[in-house]
Length: 414
Image 1 (cartoon, one colour):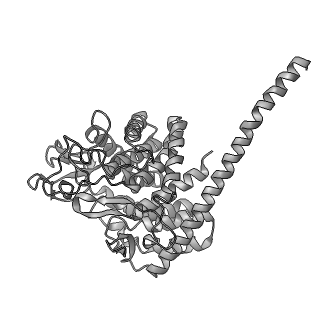
Image 2 (image 1 turned 60 degrees about the vertical axis):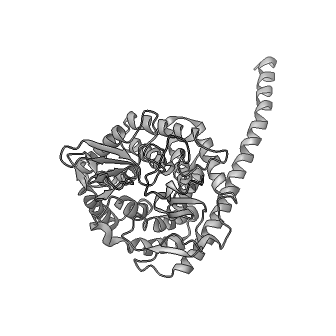
Image 3 (image 1 turned 180 degrees about the vertical axis):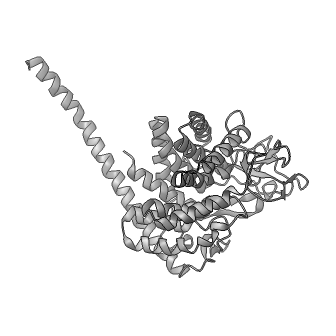
């Protein structure tokens, strides 16, 4: 090697040193952040477990009352799978067998739901609990329960609409529009259990249902700018779309932040399972619209259009009276987790950067509760369903679930 080459190599190494030091410092900061959040989450959840006692099938944590007291639900609510799922995440984050033991107990109480067909949320109920259990500790019994759950969810699929029916009959906020076959954007999240069932059984019917539902959602739930309708109401005979609107958003033509979050996460997951580029394109466009509508701390308003001209709530909706621009930490946690995965498929480092900043924002004192407060939930300031005057600026169990999943994805990211 001549002197010129030696000098060039020396200069290259010299310039690389600050970058190497910066990378090392970044990794140290990342490790410290993760360690501190694990310590908080385990300590806070310990307190929650002490408050709950043993699982009974009727005491799954969901939110708080206006006075701050804990609200629990029975297994037939849509949210009981999130707390067992969070316990599995704490095991994954710590490796401590204690969390495996309590996760198994809280998961086992949900087994009767494997035959439940009352609404579409069986994926949330069973895959967030038993799905994480089987992912971490593959087990023939878990697989059997999840397959039966997938059969139960599949029973709500219609060849007429090519969708899984979300809710049973209800009326819209105008109190006159009847919905006999409502499908909500949230339903995308329940398809993961169908993809799983297809893989473990070799039966393509579950895969086909999930793809047909995804295609119908892609066609009917997105506006031209890739904002989302919350609810699409189908005709049960012809399968035609009758109307598009909202149940939990500000108005029929607004963009409910958590609905947009479900779309981003859901289509990212469907791309993972199918590798069909149209689903990746949908996830990217939905994510880009979401990111354009964020405030500086990256935690969205509960609806992007709350209080804006041209957006009118239904007269029975509480949003017609209450238009304070509240944040929704649950939507932020869902998107934060989704972006860590989407970044890899889209080959877009910006998504990772956004996800890291979102996670730090959620972990800040503005959104993460102080130890022993918030009825022992991790995150504050979520909005369940403001139009129903329900869970307004409260902790929500699913916000905690996706916060912990995002923490795991951050820990595993390169």
